[in-house]
Length: 612
Image (cartoon, rainbow, N blue to C red; front, side, top):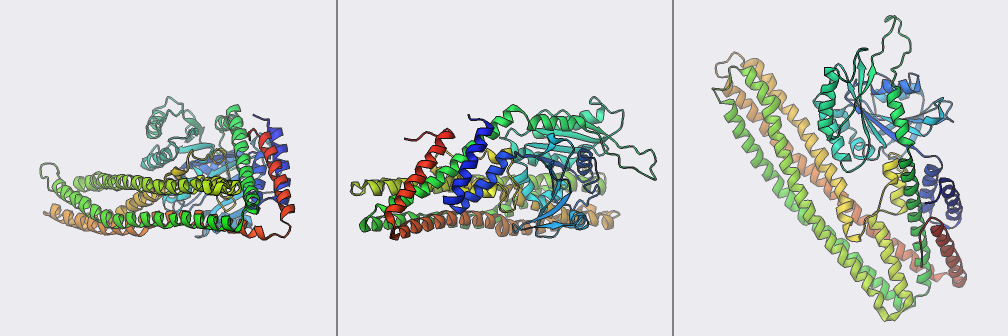
């Protein structure tokens, strides 16, 4: 593996070349990647319930009141704190969902922290730190669990899996509650197969607290069980003001936490991985640019008959789009029929079992005990089982759909590749081989457009270690399993489950309110059952609407957009190459293309890629 300085020099030469001769998208992607290579970034996400003290801990590292320490549990937003030794003056920025950004004054920034508008993706603060070792560190201060699920799902979907480190903050006095368990469980789902460190921080501890204290042992046990790995709590003591009426700016001390963070992000293993992944991404960009040049050069060698054959082959290949969309329609229609019936049946069973539970005269002494158990345990547990049934059904269905799509896409690519035998024409064979490689890069998500999205070009989170580790798959046929799998999982596992939990809470509120007026009634069981049935019927209706209008629709949208983008871009590239044949200075153009291809091969060789 080449050194970091050598990689910077190669990337610099590559950038000058791409800026003059390369594709605009590839050049733009390289500029972002080069900046990451020259100035490596680290990404640490702080999670935890509202009022656990995440913002205060960040303020403690910076030794200044940068972030508000009182946030609403329902209106908080994601705030990125980017540390750079060059930022002597604080800069406040709003990054919007439409890919735009705007510079803010501190007053507007503080307003948006508590009252974000619908277009706001996240807030960002650029700030300096007196110690250079923290330069390049990005800290993401996130809202509480409920806000993450409802308003900031992208944190779980994007920030968490791409973080270098995750810090879960628990308030000592509150302890490890249900929301902490749900949040850490969601994090586990996202990082189960990733080697991302998770630090458990217990904040605002009494001064005499140690790791063997009963409360700390309880928090450690519950957190470790939830994330299925042993966590060693880092304790941060409470801030004590000598004069409560005139509090000074005293910040929590957490040297152990930040020492761990620094050791992790500067470790040799991580540095090797960053270097290795940066190298691979540079090679991907070079390969994509080389294929563009090779496609144009080979196209110049084709005669009119061969061009006609090529167009026919591409038209045949493009018909794969209709086949894939037809498969999607078939499954979507089946889901729209099956899932509402499944919910109808499952919730009907839950209503029957709830009725049996309420009418169990030997079990309940009064309405309070019965209502608390039904509302707090029995129904939520039943809904959780129903949600699992729906998710498991989708997983089976999606696996089958992916297999069908894989087969169709594999056959189409094989057929295209087999057309190289046409007329023993070397030029035609070369253009087909180049096309197959281009298609492969698009299907594997290895192209410049994908890299640009990863690195934050469209308002998304910038690339951390996880993003730089993006790898392609081994064969083209896994396109649909990979490309759609993550989005589909989020649509089902997040939108459906959590929206259903929210709707259930609203439904059960009716039951809780009903307790007030039926408490003294001798027929409380009958009345309670009536309200429970009503609430569950409403929930059933909402659940059916939710899964049809949102879950299935989101699956369709992701599939359709991905399929169309792959084929639209491919057809556009082919027509561009064919039109380039009319270049009056064909021989000079061919010579330029040849020289560019040879230079790219030289760069690829320097990066460790061998060529024939």
